[in-house]
Length: 453
Image (tube, rainbow, N blue to C red; front, side):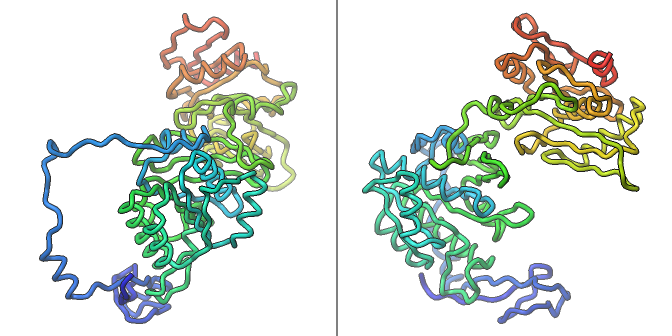
């Protein structure tokens, strides 16, 4: 790469400085200066005169079919859209230790076993450390190449020289260029190096995966422009107290963003979970109060999840409201509806709600399950274990429609549930369902009267 000059620009007001400043002298903002590359006037004039590309009519653009690399990891291939598109650049983000490197090591191993040339560039581990992990995963292939490097110029040169069938950079926060004075991991370093490596991968038509760490708020560490630069943004989520992980597509230019992959962490690495409903309900106890099963929709996949609630008299001045996997603000709304519309006394009760298995249930279709779990725990009356419910609850205690109701019913019927309570306004083909009793309900009062008599 050619030597470049840089300047520091305040991200609040646009004030420019040749040196970094802690406080902007123009607007008074603290820690707002970001290093940016300065383009010389000569280069600007050159770029303004030379026109490399001419506009082309859309009718004259030739259509090329997408060629994909199939890794053989079913959950992984589903999330990326059916396989890795040649020349695509993807960013895989997740918390440290969640399993990002392990998953991509396994994907690379599958491609290497197919005879594909794979390059794994690590800036966090030495070659011997990666070799030890590969041995644990039983990865042995002459087509799998390793490189321990953090210099962006060297990585770009190796990509152009080796031209692998797939490359992985682990992680983009460790890569730096000597053209900038800032330390590795700085916003300017991540943006500059990410752009240089991405352009190289596009030019050489190399499928590339960048591994990135996330901040405390769950966003990718570094500039947001890196997320817009890549073709796909994948997030690897999970709780350290559980063995399963969720791979979620937030952005995908070559596939749907409504797909997730479920993995289980084992001594053999990441193992795909093809039947998540059985996996999530394996440890359910049907004989206790405060538990209800709902059909959660995650993208295009539906699976059964147990919602648990515990209601107990408070010992403090202010009742506790604790949730795991459920939006706490949504819980507050449901408690207000139960008190106002049904007259149930939750004002002097501690309330704890949990989505079993550590999942995050964000869709409103789980409202009915949360409300029934709360009532069941308050009344100390268990709900039939063979009943599944789904529905959004409005402020008037009405049960509102949910999406893809037929797919939810099919999943409950497949798992052997005998009754399914759903919003009455949803259009359901009852004649096609012989193994499960379908019950459309209009309001929460109607459901409570049916279940608790």
